[in-house]
Image 1 (cartoon, one colour):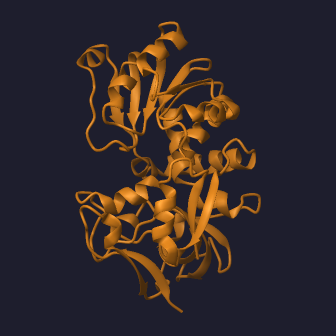
Image 2: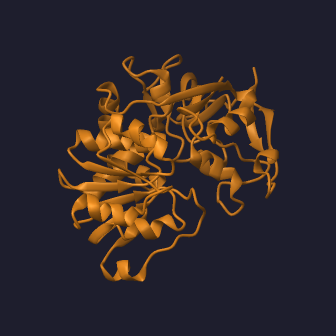
Length: 334
């Protein structure tokens, strides 16, 4: 029995994927208090690609780093003292807490995590939903909760056509919050409207700040979520009310951003929001598990499923995951 793993062997600045290889590692032993999980399905998230592409990223450790922020699997073995789970149960291991920092992500067949960091998946939740139970749904729930937007007010979001963006549209509607959704391609407008988006702005032929003023009658958005950064952040900040909150949670345009000084004088608050910080809070973790599992069961948050590749075909999966209009989240299976 072997443990296939995608390993970052070296960092290649102009072609990061060239530094990745499929290798064989020993299957982890079930140490006391630990659970060994055989991962059967894991999504490709932007954060996974970022983890090995950015040389300065803390997790990128050539020769000892395996990407992968989430997945679903079967309990393979349990260590001494573990009573919460048993062999054969379907579980979600919460990787962000300890494994990612050690370079032991889910892009491998087997992982070992602390027993308190696995969640037994109910039969009502499918493999594809369980595999992406954490990163997108918990981020959507956490950011939207933290903005504290009153019912009937607008939240502005960038990268609205992403899996996370689509989930936010449905959750906001469920909570009575209106959405203004920024996309690059105008072809996405009808699709997002069908999901329940109130307004959609295409940066290809519209000015974001101008349109937000028109949509809100000059009130502007109550708060905003930005996955892009770069020059777009300036437009986002200009589109929120005086004293409004903007969360930066992604860097699709790179690690730098622009903000207007006038918006800072208006009291616009620009803050980074990242899930790993929130997951260190036990009570928050419990809320995420309870609320998100119910939202999935009630089909408020639904998986957007694209193509599935074998773990050995990770290079093809990476390319597919970055195709424009790919149609859903790409998965790696074991």
